[in-house]
Image 1 (spheres, rainbow, N blue to C red):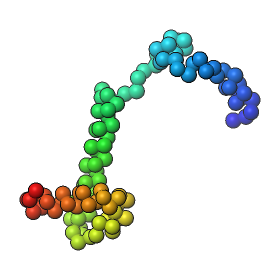
Image 2: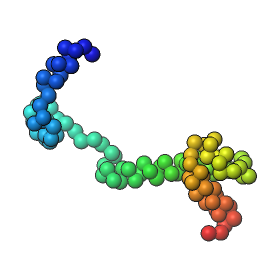
Image 3: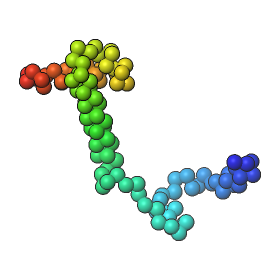
Image 4: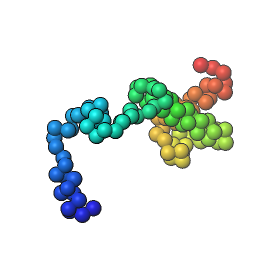
Length: 103
């Protein structure tokens, strides 16, 4: 990007547009601005869903690892799986609790 392009872009900048709403911007530009879609979920619900999916994935990775090497140390698993030892400990404990049937 050349200096001229930057100067032109900055020439179009105005601090009064920093807090303009999407509705006003849409009206000003004459185009429809659609809200970000999260499959009909609120931001909070969307983030909770993503966190749950991430946790389920990590849980499955630890369980799969333990199926192959039940004697593996938490540190070894954390290094290989790219997780913290705290996360590995959490799911390792759950793994053995579900296998023994105790809670």
